[in-house]
Amino acid sequence: MITVLVHGLVVVGLDQLSKMLVLSHLRGNRRIALGSYVQVRCVINPGGLFGRAPGLRAALGLWVLAVIAGLLLVTHASSFQSHVTQIALGWMLGGATGNLIDRMGRGVVVDFVDCRVWPVFNLADAAMVLGMLLAFGCRF
Image 1 (cartoon, rainbow, N blue to C red):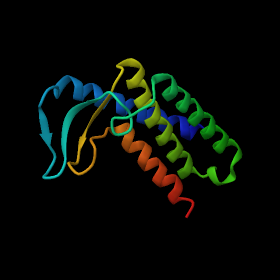
Image 2: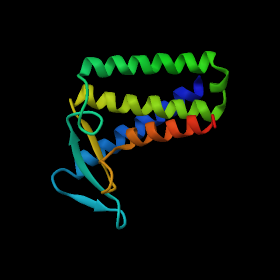
Image 3: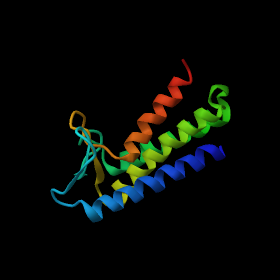
Image 4: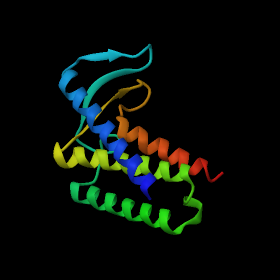
């Protein structure tokens, strides 16, 4: 359980710090190229997944369900007792929390990683996806 909390808090902290830096330095059309295919630019996302989302109340409800499900998995499912799986759950819950903090505090989510062939995303989104891949990769 401690592993899930520590990794979740690290994800939330890095996510919020990165969004603060992007908001303070990359407003408007400013961009930073990271090679030929990736750039950092500030994109304000008023919706959720790909610009579409339920309301704030529904988002908070989904977050609460995710936390409850994560706690139940960590405490009762033997397949979720491994250290790697608990790290993965921490990343998923931390990412969901980071975006929920944006939605509740700013009313929008700040995205900034642009790979040009995929919708712009942030560290919270990446943590959720990588956490899912890591958790389910441990099952197969």
